[in-house]
Amino acid sequence: MRSGGARRSAASRLAGATPRMSAASTPHKSQRCLLPGVALAFVWLESARGELLACEWQDPQAPGELRPLADIPGADLQPPAFNPAVYARDATAWRPTSAVPPGSAHARRVWAALAAIPVGEVRTYAQIAAEVGSAPRAVGQACRANPWPLFIPCHRVVSARFRTSCDVGGYAGDQVGELARVKRLLLAREGVLAGR
View (spheres, rainbow, N blue to C red):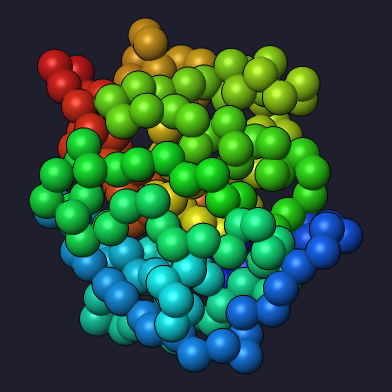
């Protein structure tokens, strides 16, 4: 199961008019890690200088090729703020990024708000919507289109029903299936679902 195709096409549709640098022609390296309990592998692509170019969840038995996002804004062409392989061992190793992938102005505001959610905390779609001056459904669409999962922690945005029913909501467009399980496992690893 691959989640990146939908993300890449959504991200390319959302591309704005900000001056950008092309990462497609630069040498790059692909890295992957498995998180305990998660059936999918997290794969990310970095430039030769270590700048984040792309990432996605992949079936470890059927890995696919990652392609760098086109037209990453120059100011956002940065190394990841943390190493996912270290996060796989210790969820507190996650660090927020100041970089935001290419997208519409709205999506970039949402992604910046998501990057500010600390490990062990969640926000509802409505809370993020109020923060960025939007609607919960539009926030959900931006979360679904997030081309940098884990680095931009869309898994930390939950349904309004979460407080009463532990309904975490969907992940990358999945309400059920492997990606939905990934969201629950990430939140459990980060201590959000402890005792629930």
